[in-house]
Length: 327
Length: 255
View 1 (cartoon, helix red, strand yellow):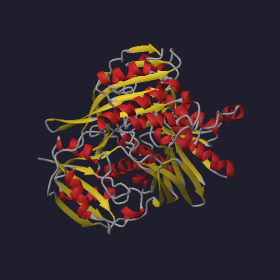
View 2 (view 1 turned 180 degrees about the vertical axis):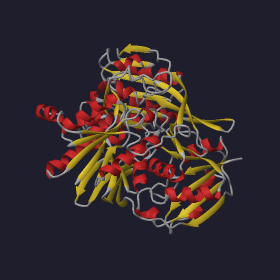
View 3 (view 1 turned 135 degrees about the vertical axis):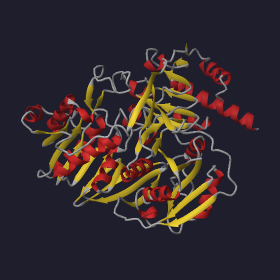
View 4 (view 1 turned 90 degrees about the horizontal axis):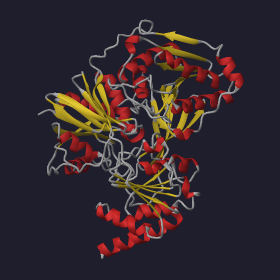
């Protein structure tokens, strides 16, 4: 069976990034998953390997390098290069994040491999790797493949449960020398957010607010509803431009694309650029004052009404239900 | 200071966008514009030029004849000159082929900074600028939500999961931006008039010494239109909307 390398990103707290389990699940469908990470010389490589085993990695290749501590995406490309020499790999997967994209872009040039970009699903047809993609905001689904023997894949999807845990993964630790000529990390500021709120990308439920909220203060109504549903917090571009919420919450063409089980759009008219980021949601619920708002044309359930009346009641009733089922 | 800005022409996201049966963009159907994110990258360069008039800005694109319009737009906004890489053999280039062509063109320009959008609104791959950096042996910083040119280095904010990185990179470097860097300016009448006299230098595969290898590259196998979403149940709030919504969410097992 061929080896599938996974570029593992490390969160600021030293644990594998949230999408690692999803990548391992995709890899398991294609071959033997090998998790590859670059960490600092003093970072715990063995505990990291065990954490990756718990997410289904059979083999962990952990490169220790100073670059991982002080350089953006430092050592990621070199760790994968070293892993490619050691393993008989057909495929390298990463998440479509800033680090993942840079690492695979550099790897493609160094190894003369080609990329499958923004893959949603991956399958094998014989030896050939085929990726599906969501194009133009989900208006099209395409499939593509490569002519190169090594396939590098950036993965846009998320949310799959990790494969069964491996109790004693094989952990290989290697020291790597990396030229630190890149972009240096000076400081990191943690985002201000409520601790238990799920990440927008990959959340099962997303609650988004738009211009209809009318002010930054009112936007807390959206946050309250999101938290009552344990949902990711989203926003339209208009709400972001108006300063109601940070840009990282923007859903749409130029923001995050989401595909949750339930998308709740509140006070969002449904500009084509917003729809491009959420129209592949399984169910869409819209609340808007304007019955002609385009969002209603794609909503499974829509309420024409005053969100300032509806939101507090809705949040209260959901909280009540949660406390009943929890109690 | 010499700054090259990568410009990409894309279908307007304000209009429905179509794929041809080949899985490539249907250019006949589309209203083609300069991608807004590449205009925002240009704006970063223009602000440097606002502060130091000696700054030279070159807009660079790879694309068919129609892409000239996107370069003219960049020139009307204040770029000094443009470079247009155009060649039949480059049509359908994947990310690696695109990056190789751009890198050869950028070698000729020899800029202190290369600016680009973090990801285009059509392909959204977000890998070409980092490939260009690798091909040119340059550091890469991006995508940045704020960019500050400080002499021979650039500092910036790089949003990642869970927070913001403060980064620093020495020039020359390849930099990409998110839309948080701010809106692009509008062209002024004088800019539109002078743009017509600014040079657009033509390059092709031969002049850049490129042999394009489409065979090993990415190719589309199939393309399917998503079935349209049918509109569901739309109700007027008559005081019972919350009850009915909760009943709906429960019936769909969403809560």
